Image (cartoon, rainbow, N blue to C red; front, side, top):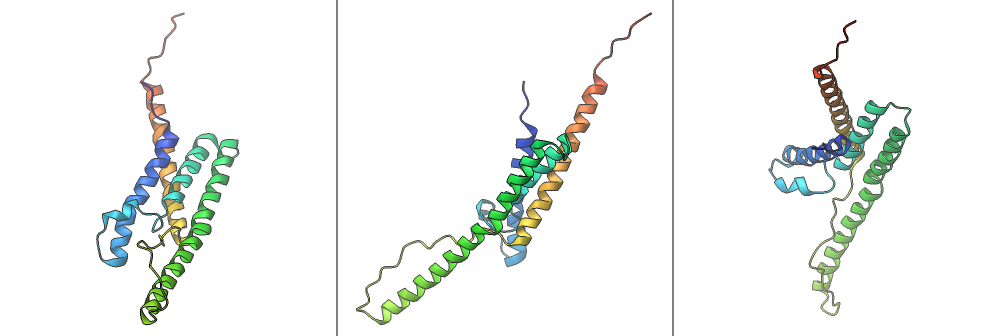
Amino acid sequence: MKRMNRGIVTALSAIGIAQGLKILTYKKLTGNWDVKQALTTGGMPSSHSAGVAAIASYVAAKRGTRHTETALAVVFGTIVMYDAQGIRRHTGEIAHLVNDLEDKITKLSGEFPSLEYVKNEEELEELLGHQPVEVGAGALLGIAIGLVSAKIENDERKARKNSTPHKSHDL
């Protein structure tokens, strides 16, 4: 039976662990347990950063830092992390401002009946991106998971190699 690609398993594991940790960090921040945090975007730590850092560190440990695959993983990972703490975070901040503005317009329309306004039933999602510290924490988590995964794979390979019977040649 063929085994799964360890790089994919490593990255997906890092994402899953980071998503699970969001429950704990939310509890520490608010004092409340909320398992739904495992399904959210944004928050501490960044699962995007954990996933791309895990695959980049795994590839670097397996292929070396000068290999093209490592360069690809690092460059694309950097883009993902920049996007998570930049563009996506700013989009969330804009959504927050829009939601506040809508609340104010709703209140104002109640004070002035001639101003007809129907509020949207759902607010815009505000927690889309990450603060730089959330990206950094996700990256550190991912690097650790990637290096551990590479070490486990190397140890397994050595164990298989040592357990393979060797032919002895009689002279």
